[in-house]
Image 1 (cartoon, rainbow, N blue to C red):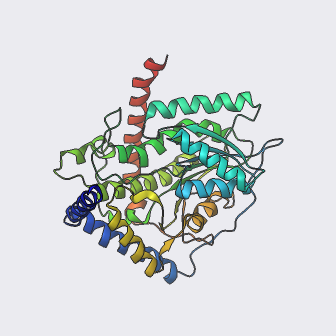
Image 2: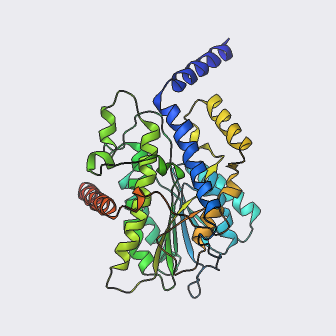
Image 3: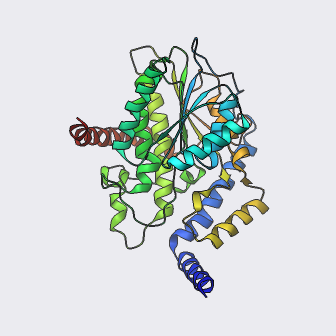
Length: 369
């Protein structure tokens, strides 16, 4: 009887979701955006591709790689792959149990893997700040060079209901973009301090192509402007967060180029395409299964092990490559949407994000001191 009730509830939730604008936006806009990306890849045979290079290694140290969202899907697969490439991989995730499980699984497959796990909630500035301190303490305690060679901002969620962070931000915007921005800002000194070339890789999505105009202000970036709507616009917020990550990538690349102090930090955006992960776990399961089935029939769905190809391409691209967008594997790059290259929009987002970063510091610092 209980099983029948659960099945009816699942069916009712699925019907409600099908009747929403968000369902059709995801079904139509996202599929078209993915097809557009692959068509551009096929119709632009002269698009640049780059070989994978051995990771730059500090003297007497393994290069340090930090991966957020490292306990499942793409993050977990990337952590294993990069441990095989010789990185000391720092796993960042929300669940201590899943972090332990991930460490055991990777070390069982790669006996030489050097791993360190930190429990961090990327949607919380306080948690990110604590992680930054713990990381620097760990580097000091282990007598490793006080630097980081690779940061992969991979953590992301697709929420289907309103949830607010401690700061009052929409949780999806906080996890997918604001957290990545704050983490990169806090870790930038360690990346700049690296004696060998270092890099930030931001994992974005083809769904950014579904955004045709965007207003950049604190209300939008924090997701508060969406809270006034009757129905939670989950698809639109996800698209916005991924577009923000792209705009941030290009603007950070530009800002680094303006620095007077010499550095070897590069910034790359990467898009793994459609990958069978648990990103859609909040969508009614019957609908997510159908979506994966259709993508598989179209030959567009990848496993996490194959989907990380563009992430590893970006991580191991030649050190002088920066400000590019990897897509499709085989070291290939692609032009992201026209809107993502809007320099004025990127600068507005940078200013707004820096204001939020400083505001968070002012609120958190007195609590922690």
